[in-house]
Image: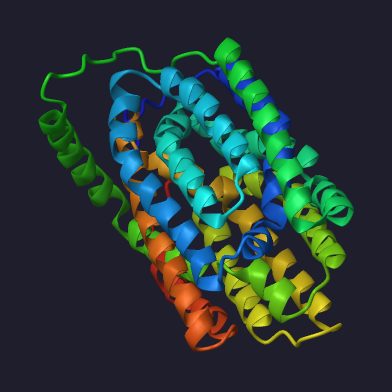
Amino acid sequence: MDMDASGESDLQEKIIWANVIGLTLSWIIWNPFQNAVWTYWQVFLYALGATPFIISLISALSGITISIARIPGGYLADKVGRRLLIVSMTYVIAFTYLIMYFANSWEIILIASIISNIALFYQPALNAIIADSLPKTTRGRGFAIINILPSIVTLISPYIAYIYVSKYGILGGTRELLLLSFLSGIAAATVRLFTLKETIKHRGKLDSDIVSEMKFEYKKAIKIVWGRMKFLLISYALTGIAMGLSYLTQFYSLKYLMVSEEKWAYIQIISFATYLVLSLPFSVATDKIGRKPPIIVATIVAFISSVILAIAPIGEEAFLYVLISSTLGSLAWAMVSSALPSIEADLLPLEIRGKGYAVINLINSLVISLAQLLSGAIYTVMGPRMPFYLSSLFWLLSLVMFMKIPETLRR
């Protein structure tokens, strides 16, 4: 039987609709309130006494935590299955929003964030169950549908956030949104409990010496991942630095460029709408013309977006610059939101997908986290604009590397 680059059979696979519908529905319930929380998150932390460096530190430590947690998460996803991890940890993450609701200092937020990111060790299982549930020939469109439908309801998230913040202030409004995130998170976890189906049929038993077995299994997985995805992994490292350096965009726009809270909400809505409108057409392109072309164009667009943000003026004119930059960023994300998951799924064999996604996400999270920490230091020492100038440089470097990745869609 002929095998493609990922080791999967050329035979047509079937869509596992229970998983597609269950995950999509859970995100429709949960995402609007989660995204509303993040709309003014950095300013909320600032109101709790966090400096720009501390804001970056909280995100960086959370990212490092999830980087470590994904290692056993990827192993367990392939050993005990995807469903158990996803359902149980969704409940845990929902409860961390309740802890944040009662937090009266950024230190409590940090603790809750670390707990949440430990629980996110189920992400390799989540990546794997989605890839397992979609046929390769329609994978780009499948990823788009799963992303787009929750994005429709998420479109109103910034306006929800603005309503609460304008009524209760940054502190009170964000706390109310945290409570809503807890309640909707419990509902989303329950939906997953009753809908998700296991996709890995031949699960192994946990070895008594789990650490030794994990090392052995990951050595095999890393060899496969590096052999098939070398240039993609290097590209991810460079884009991770670029994204991490621009982490303080929200704080920079609201506190340095002096964009108003209301206009910031409008910027977020327009950005979401841009992603929403363009994701499906680009997902079709991913399945028709290939994975690589959208990735190349998106990297160029991301570079332009970063430059515009770096040169934005302070005051009334800043709104237009930030709007254009944010819209271009959403355009870039629309281009790659199907292409990147598709090329990953194409290259990862089914039996190591959990561990493979853990390795990929480990690189992404570690690099982004370290770059975020660096962005806070640069912001404080070298000025607010410098992180965005450096981000632009790394987008250019990543473009060079993305040119070297292979096309995985068979004509």
